[in-house]
Amino acid sequence: MFQIIGIGYVLHTQYINIIIISWGLLQIIRLKKSFTDAFILIVLQSKLDYLSKININFDYQILKGKERV
Picture 1 (cartoon, rainbow, N blue to C red):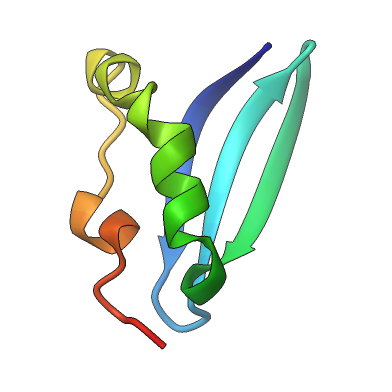
Picture 2: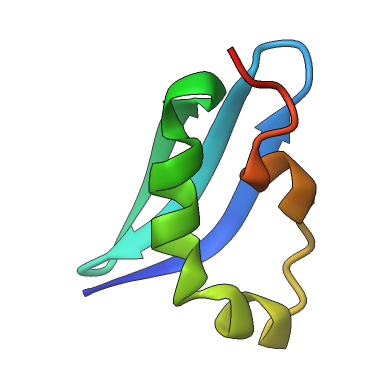
């Protein structure tokens, strides 16, 4: 299993970075926003409670995809 520890959104590049720990390794997944709204929502849907417990701040509106292509 893996544990999401952070989500970063870079305004000028249209990418979302998901930082995860998988089997003790720190990994960063860079996803292009226009192709990954559904994927990100699926991944995060089960993690929202966990993220709020560790006070990770992220803009849920961005994850829902304000900018559609």
